[in-house]
Image (cartoon, rainbow, N blue to C red):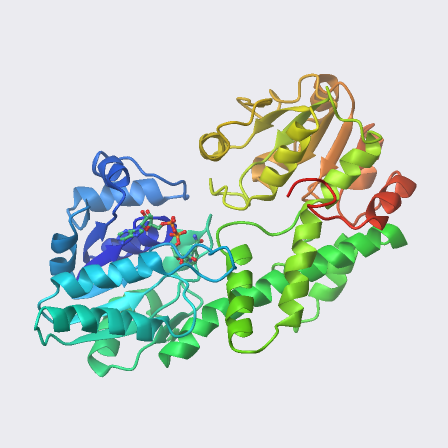
Length: 463
Ligand code: NAI
C-alpha cells in the first residue's frame, strides 16, 4: 500500500519504518529540511532501540523514503498519516498549528481520494477541524475530491516503540467511513494477525481515549509518589507496599514505581491539555489538577533531600549525575526531571559531571548554556571527587555497579537515588549513605524534615 507519513519525529519515524517493514511503500515528509537531509544520508535524528537498522534495511529496499517536498508527499499515499507535534500553548491547551498546517498541505495538493489518519495526540473535535480545513482548501480549488478523516492515536512507548508498534496492545481507530476503515484494517492486518486488536469507534471517542490513557497513567505515578513520600516518614518501604498492592489484579504491577516525577513529551502536556479541554467545557478535573501539582512537587523532592543533607549550602560542591533522559532507552530530554535538578544545582553554584548512555548529545542541545555541567565517558568516569552521586534515570547499566570502585572514586560515599535501583541495607553494608525514594531511610530525621516543607519549584526559586 502507498502510505505517506507527515512528520518524521518519534512517532512518524517509527510508524513509517514499521509500515515499510511489512512491505508498504512509505514516503515520510518533514518540513525540517535538515532532518530530511540527515535521514537521506543514512542518519537517524532520534535514538530508539532497533530503529536505525530497520530504517537502513527499508531504505535499501526502497520501501522507505524521505522528502521535504509537500506536493510529492500528498500525491504519494492514499493513506496520509499526520504525526506532527502538538506542543502545549501557554495556557496548557494543545497547539494545533502543525496539525492544521499538515491538513492545509493535503487540501492544497490532493486530487484523488485520500484517507487522512491523525496519529498526533489532539483534543476532541480536532477531526472535525482537519476535515473543515481540507474541505475549505478543496472549495478554493473548485475541486470535489472525496476524503475521509480518521483518528488513530498512537500508544507507543519511547524506548520500546518498535515492539509496541509491531505488537500493539490495541489499535484505536476512530473511523466513520467504510472505505477508510477497510483500507486501514488491511494496512494493520499483519500487526494484529493473531488477535483482533483493532477497536473501531467514533472519532471523538478515539481522540479522547489517548488523553484518558495518559491521564490514568500519570495519576498512577503521582499517587505512588505521594504514597512513597508518606512511607518514608512512617518508616514503611514503598517497594514492599508496591508488591503488596500490585498482587491485586485490579491494580497490577505495571507502572507502579515511585520516582522523581513523570516527564517526557507526553504526560505533562497531555495532563494539562485534558484539563484545559474540561475547563473550556465548564468542567473541572480535580483529580488531574492534583496529579499535576503532585508531579511538580515530586520533581523537587530529591532536591530537598540534597539541600537538607548539605545544610543548604551547595556552592562549590560537585555532583555526579547518572541519567539525563526522562526514562531509559531514549534520548528524549523533553520535560526530563533531570533538567530541574541540573538547573537548581547550577544556580546554587555547584558543578555537575553527568553521564547518560544515549542522551548526552541531546542534553547538550537543549541545555547549551549550562556552565558548570560537563559530560563524562562512562558511569564511573563521572564519579571522580564528587560529593555525592544522584541517580535520575533507571538505565540497566546503572543497576549493578562496582560499589567498591564507586566508593574509591567519590569523595563522599553518598547516593541520592531517584529511581530506587539499590537495596538500602546492602548499600549501608557497603558503607554508603543512601537516600532512595520512599524506602528505608538510613537518616530518617533528615528526610522527614525535608518533606515537611511544601516542595515546589517556586520554593526552590526554580520558576
Ligand atoms: P516530534 O516533535 O518528535 O516530531 C514532530 C515532527 O513533525 C518534527 O520533526 C517536525 O519538524 C514535523 N512537522 C511539524 N509540522 C510539520 C508539517 N506541517 N509537515 C511535516 N512535518 C511537520 O513529535 P513526536 O514525539 O513524534 O510526537 C508527535 C505526536 O504524537 C504528538 O502529538 C505527540 O503527543 C504524539 N505522541 C508522541 C509519543 C512519543 O512517545 N513521543 C507517543 C504517542 C503519541
